[in-house]
Each structure stands twice: as C-alpha cells, then as structure tokens.
Amino acid sequence: MKRNIFTIIVMYVALAASAQSVHNGNKAKLDQYRTQKVAFFTQKLQLTPDEAQVFWPVYNQYEKKKIDLLREIKKTGEELRAPAVNMSAKDFEKMADEFVDLKVKQAALLQEYHVRFKTILPSEKLWKLYRTEEQFNREIFDKVQQRPKK
Image (cartoon, rainbow, N blue to C red; front, top):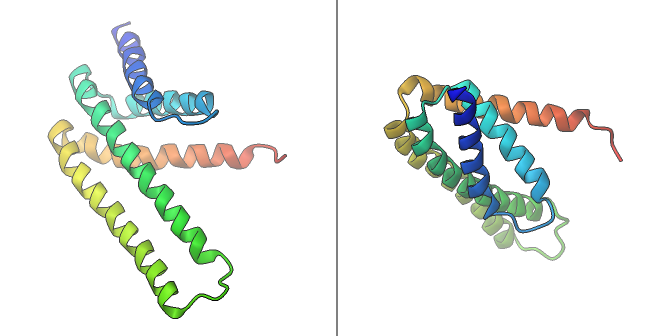
C-alpha cells in the first residue's frame, strides 16, 4: 500500500515538472511517456522515498538539458545531411566542428550529472539507473517500430 502511494506521488512530481516544458499539442503523449518512464524507473531502481524525493527533480533537470542538446545535435546533423549547394570547405568544417562540440557537451552533461547522482544514489542504484535508461529507451523504440505505419 505504501509502495503504491509512493509511486503515485513520484509520478505526480515528475509530471508536474514535465508539464512546464510542454510547448505544443503533444502534451497527452508526453504525459503518458513520462508516466511510463517514472513507473518503469521506480520499479527497476527500487528508490526509497527519501531517494526519490531528491532524485526526481535532479533527473528531470538532467533530462531537460539532455533533450535540449539532442535537439541541437539533430539540427546540426540535418544541416550536415542536407544537400550542400554553394557551401565552402570552411562552411562544412564549421558545421562539423559544431556537431562535435555538441557531442562533447553531451558527454560533459553526463559527467556533471553523474557526480550529482552519486551524491543521491548508492553505487548499485547508480549503475541500475544507466542500465534502466537503456532498457526503457529500447522498449519505447520497439513499441514505435511495432506501430502500424500511416
């Protein structure tokens, strides 16, 4: 019973934090995604109430920064794949440098939050966090791949 109430509280906190970042009509899908993610992580990590109270705000902050960087990486990657008309070697070099700089920022972000997560979670749960992220992303990817195409 306490576990169910705790899970509901954790989901509410995560959804409240994510609701601030929604800018378009995909709010319901984003809320569903976040709810699934919180439930999945809570089950896999077996967070105590104290750990969850500290973990989720930090993780949500990390995820927002990670998503922002991924958007920048995607944009730069699209520019690199776009047909190059009248682009100089210097233009290509600049785009490639921007792409690599964003990848370095992505690694630095992980390193920064890894240090923060170490102060919140015991090392076993920290390792489980990284594995759980991979498992969750794989499950979401598999679900998307199984959808009928329009």
